[in-house]
Length: 161
Image 1: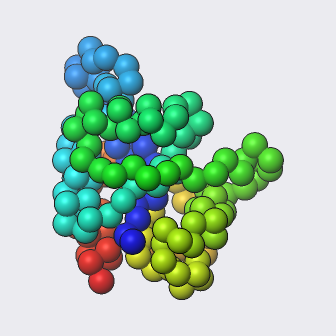
Image 2 (image 1 turned 90 degrees about the horizontal axis):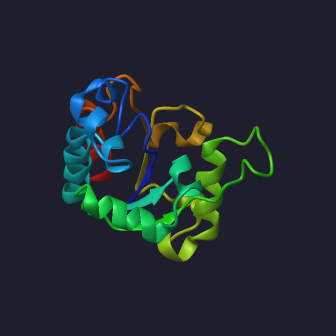
Image 3 (image 1 turned 180 degrees about the vertical axis):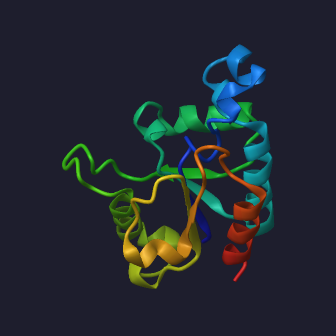
């Protein structure tokens, strides 16, 4: 199974988006999502059939059901299957990469292999707190502009291998 480990802030929104009238006059939390970034993520999903595992701190504020409803409202056409565990509540120095690793270890039946052999994934995030072995699968976005056409194209290429 192909998976996108997805952050929200800095990926599906950006500093540039937050300066727009649509953001300023929109309804929270729907206004937090840049429609251009949604189009790009939908393109990745459509071309790769990838599922979403949310890594964003939004997973700490909303339930899986609430996030699915929100994604539907903003026209994000994805299969949101899970959240990564929150390991930071136990240790403030935990990296997001450790949370992704833990999710992979705990979900062998979903990924279809041992976590060390799992390569059908990408990570979309604006922060670089990943593990070294995840660097090949990590696509860092720029908080200034969020998900870009270039990152989208490279993510599709990686997931289609």
